[in-house]
Length: 143
Image (tube, helix red, strand yellow):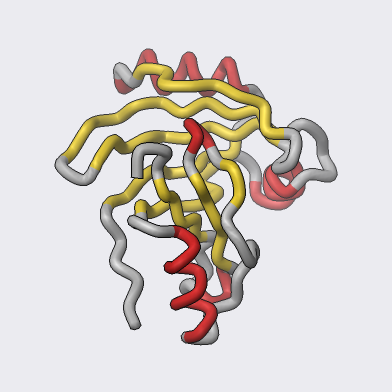
């Protein structure tokens, strides 16, 4: 069974300084801040910057600043520097998508959905199963 993706939900970008990242993306591209939060469980401070609304829903740039060097984003920055960290794709049902992908042998980072930005339900797929790209499935709060 295939897992239909409904849209590109967001591109996650690792930054050293969240406020500087927000200033850069708002001044260069006219993006607006849709939400900011600290996610202790994932070890980040983050901002979702609205790009556009499309028939499938809104699209965002997600800026991620690590809460410390021993967090996933902190380790990413130490190894690779600032840049694209992951791609988030919209799905209608993240739990069902995880089950279908598990059946196909896809390596999962998350065995079940967890809290994501803007109230979404999310889960990550391991990059080794998805062409080297850390992939996030996103079921929006409204979905």
